[in-house]
Image 1 (cartoon, one colour):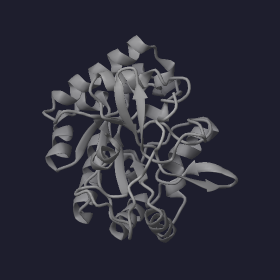
Image 2 (cartoon, helix red, strand yellow):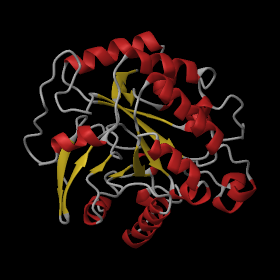
Image 3 (cartoon, rainbow, N blue to C red):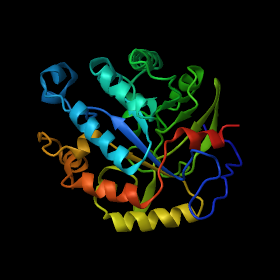
Length: 297
């Protein structure tokens, strides 16, 4: 399903977007527990989650305090599992002025589901978030960027349920496809239009790697990130950043993981909160919704 033709982007100068409330630098948060890791069974399988220590309230509260200090509003993609168990946390997020989106319910890769089980997981997440008193949800992010060539059928499901934008298609190998657009763009589905807002990637080590989040963001110093952000904004590019509350845990639980997942989960967590704060102080960031609306015709 190709993107619609003519993906015209607004022309910006000096890194600012003309629409009030929108910024070319976007901050998003995936609200999940430290043990919500796709494709890992054993002691981290869903049947064991209830016995694992929950840290999402403390780490999300710390992140909310950080965002309040730097005056940044973000989009929080909330896992329904978390919303059901910590409704007051979700209430604090939206009452602080942040946008609420859905991250699904059970943190399952979309391409591992059927249309029917994805619909059920999505609807369950929406009910959990609504029960927290949050405003209507119009944005979605799939766990592990799992709307890709194997699961494009998920986009009409989202459009049919009234979602305006998605941020799940990563222009990278393994989790996505390097040929995907790096810019926000409209995608036409059988159920209507949805705006796709991909994560920020960069060309390093001969391939496309995460720039705005994960190990790719944690490996870079704030000065380098801010320099690249400025260049991207001057070129009229939107940079969608993403973080997780567990990344700023002072004492994160450590479990045995496959080598690649251990690297992605634990690489340079030390003092990441301080580096993130420096980045947020050094550039203008905002939520994803206002940016997505500029591409919705």
